[in-house]
Amino acid sequence: MKKDTKNISRRKFITLTGGAAGFVAMGGFGMNMDWAINNQEIDAETLENNTISTDVLVVGSGMAGLFAAVKAHDAGANVLMVSKGRLGASGQTPFAKGIFAYNKDKEKLSIDEFVAKVSRSALGTNNKAYTRQLAENSLARVNELKDWGFFESSLYNKSFSKPIEERNIPVQERVTITHLIKEDDRVVGAAGFSIDEQKVLFYEAKSVILCTGAGGFKPNGFPIGDLTHDGTVMAYNIGAKVTGKEWNDGHPARSENPAACYDGWGDMFEQKPSTTSIEIRHDLGVDMNYMAYVNGGAAQMGPPGRGNQNNTVSGGPYRPEEFSSQGAPGGGPPQDGEERQGPPPGDRERKRPPRKDGKGAPPGMGGNVVGGSTAGMSIHKAEGLVPINDKCESTIPGLYAAGDALGSYMAGGIYTQIGSSLSGSAVQGAIAGETAANYSKTVKNKNVSASKLKSIQEDILAPLKREAGYSPAWVTQTLQSIMIPNFVLYIKKENLMKAALAYIEELRDHHVPHLRASNLHELRLAHETKNMVISAEMKLRASLMRTESRCSHYRLDYPEMDNENWQAWINIFKGEDGKMKLEKQPFNTWATTSENKEIEQIS
Image (cartoon, rainbow, N blue to C red; front, top):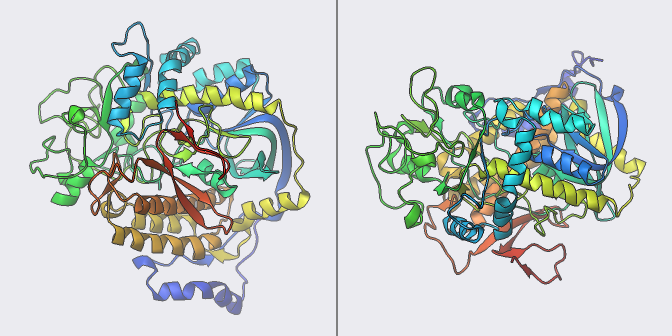
């Protein structure tokens, strides 16, 4: 039911907008002000409540979510999958076309040698247990996918549906999960709302597996628009530790029509997936961003001495000598007329077919490129919930994560193995599913108080009930203008990051609390915007804390690696005062759930 807001009094409007007046006077970050009356299209008070119980709740329906649901079911648990998108067709899963499979009978490197070489490329940032786990389990997951028909189509919904339907696992699509629920220091469920049915949904669960992917700041040019760090922020809000926010993914976009994702990467979506073997690299760092910073101009972007880059510079991000000839992902853009040899960036064994428009290869493979198309996203598997063991278990009992939602550091703070992202999601999803199912057998569903559920519902629906406020689109655009510049997110300096952080804190404290939504789609956007603002604060604080340059993190004021002080990951958590806290976790150790617990070495 639409609420009439046309007759609101002038006095009340001035009262509602008074909080924004000062911001207007400051120029609103140089952008037009967006404070406006909220013309509600639905009445928030009329939304129904539904409560659903299960043993294992899987949030997300990409590669990690698929295996989490299947293996949790096979381990004897009742499973429910909930997804913001469609099974096999949301997040980055439909874009990924190469999947790594380690076959001990064919590979020249042993698993020990593979782990050692990844560690060398990752400059110590990888978690060796998860690197080894990838090699040990990847072939089994690939063979299961083959049985389901995964390699027969460029679209994944049909092959993903096969094992789900065979097991009668219920799937709820187009549901936005906004809250995790914790009681007695363990996860007992989640809450959110349906986009289509005008319902607030509460889920009682003995365990929850987050397969929610990574996230960015809704940049243009790369297919991550629906990934906004939802799982990470929900977990952070109930006390979980998260990691990996200082690293940066470096996928570029074509300088021609850079905002058109399909123009640059459409042929990827049209390809059938295939397997990849060992090819350890040192890719997706900030080489191109550094070149652009020094030389200036988007048209000048390109790896040193590659592509259309005519000017070379000294300095910049460190690359191990044995990986120095690789340039950008997949070997860098070829010279005009040069044919690429070897696999394309992170996706296939064979060469990518030519673009249909005849204008050259996709981003990073020819012509001029621009950066920022993955702004806000870390390296695959290097950001997300901090694990306390190799079973995908977080620092909150009952809460698990897999794929890009788990800060497993499987590949470290740089992209090291072609095709490992998709394979790692399958491997970790399977392990998380089985572990969560076994955990669920040891606990009972926990009743949550009516007052707590009411409070969560009020928080979910708050943007719908506001009579005036900021649109999610305006706050998101403001966030992008603060964070995406090359000299803030990629080529980092203390003074500029501190300046950006002041703006982000302003959004956090005085704009996010006033987000408005007129319908359920805008309600989803409001929650996504809130999550992105929190993630932006995490990225800036972690980048300020790491006073060195390593892998995909580059500080212009600290350009060298500091092995004396920074052989450590950075974990972020919410303190008892509600403020963001950061800590070091030494490489090759497991995080602990207690401050008094002795640190355990990773074997």
